[in-house]
Amino acid sequence: MYTIYADGNLVYAPNLANIEDGGYAVVDPVVTSELNDAGSCQFKIPNINPMYDGIQRLKSVIKVYNGSERVFRGRILDDESDFWNRKEIYAEGALAFFNDSVVRPYTFTGSVSDYFTFLVNQHNEQVDEGKRFRVGRCTVTDGNNTIVRANNDYPNTWQEMKDKLIELLGGYIMTRYEIEDGEEVEYIDYLAESGGVSGQQIVFSENILDLSRHVDATDVCTVIIPLGKSDSNTGERLTIKDVNDGKDYLESETGVALYGRVTSTNVWDDVTEAANLKTKGLELLQKSILMAVSIDISAFDLHLLDVNTDSIKIGMYNRVISVPHGINSLFQCVKTKVNLKDADKSEYTFGATTTTLTSASAANTNYAASAASAAALANIAANATANALNVALQEISETYAALEARVEALEGN
Image (cartoon, rainbow, N blue to C red; front, side, top):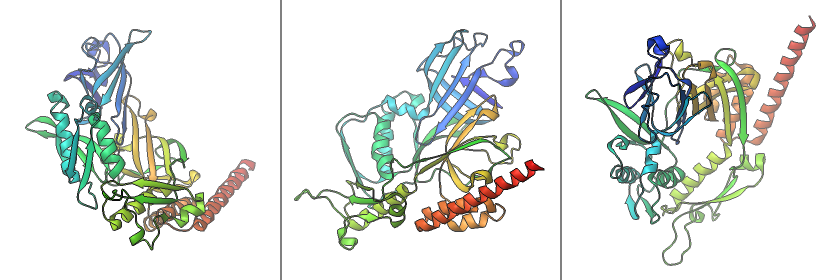
């Protein structure tokens, strides 16, 4: 059961929503969460609700719980009244608190963990107690074990985190809380991995209500020229020629076969060794070849029926299985849009697959019709040849044709 609180006061509880039970009702309550994004909570509050006049823009803190587990914390950004005099509340998640502080001009040299701590401390010194965080886990590292960062432009702290951490090093900045001495203590982590593999599978005809797949090749590159720190004397940037047979670029044969030669550069100002620069270039190239594949799914969270089933959570990996769509792969849950009153209207977005060829083959025994798609995506992840992808796609087409023939035969009978 979901409940909503504002500044510790009850706003919504389904068992107390009727006027005779207190009138703690809201309309269309939805919580949206997204990786490396603040997320939001939206709902409409009718004037019968005791908290109708008790919520203050920018000041009030909204918390949403699923049973005893807190699933959202944030502050009111906007409230407007609609035709029926209901207040439309929009709250942004706790990561948005970092928009309320700036980073003064600085130059930093040190570890990733120390830099992350430096930014969080800059923020904490400028905001109220309710917007501060304790530094939690930092598992993102750099090949040099030392990074160099600087800025003289007074950016807000969240923008600096995105530009100088996420964009350059990857990873996920996530908030969480721990109960300490009966109180919720707020932490912020910077993680190389956002979560493990969920035990709940997203399966066609079981808990998938609707599904659409998207492929965006906008940011794909198949040839990359990695560039490191500039030489203080010549001004020339470090390249990988000395560790790459005299070539300053890296090329993906699979990517070129699939998408042609698309060349791009990327600069790592803090990289001073060619070997480390090559490693970073290879990682970025592989990530680029894995196109921005995403699946929008309207699904029912089976955790609501069985508490022993893992719930669908942001950052976790779920196996998505849909024979009609030719899908059987692990996908990361990158966005959730949870309807607190109507679970059937909840939506989950899953990002690019991370399935390996071995795990895909083992899992596909009972799902032969989708094996070709899983293997194709896995082959891309393993830098296999483009021919394998073409064969797999042909097998999928043949599978669809066979299924259509069976349907037509049944209809004829």
